[in-house]
Image 1 (cartoon, rainbow, N blue to C red):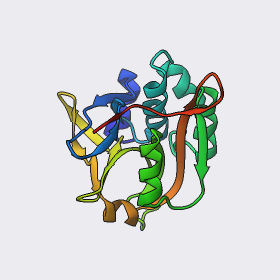
Image 2 (image 1 turned 90 degrees about the vertical axis):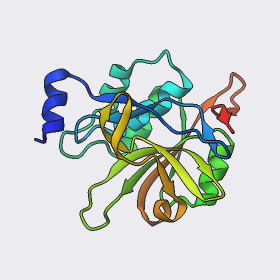
Image 3 (image 1 turned 30 degrees about the vertical axis):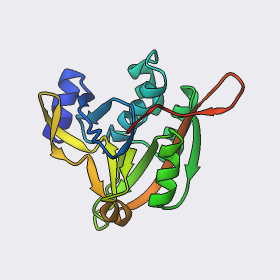
Image 4 (image 1 turned 90 degrees about the horizontal axis):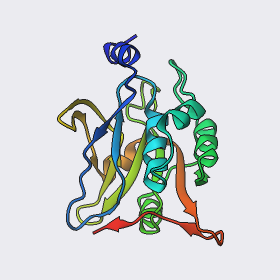
Length: 194
């Protein structure tokens, strides 16, 4: 057990707020950033980031329990998709890499994309994060849930802004495009900042 997981277990703290950049010239969705404290809750925390953005009345503890991250394996794509649906979201599951163009279209519609990525293709460790924005020039992707070691509300380790090239080089093993529903059944997205 890592020191971070030990601290999380003793304190009961699973995630911390994390400031997200919303720079001028970028298209970003209005959501609050969170980062995991332990080694295995990234999927539940990424899912919560999206659930709370669509409905702040929801309970983190209930969502976390429904996502049920395993201490060694975290959360699988089907389990996370099911938890998101149980908490009122529509989920479009992509089983292949998500291109920069498709990511832009999702964000333009107000739909955050929860991505399972393998940062280091050699070790097989996977990590969940939320793509919540992009910029065309320079081509960049803005992500939540990619930070660790917090001080005064900002992560000291990790990145929230990835170059398009770096994002596309990551092995994306799952992508969940998330939306809400209007009373008439139409898909609804989150507000954008420009």
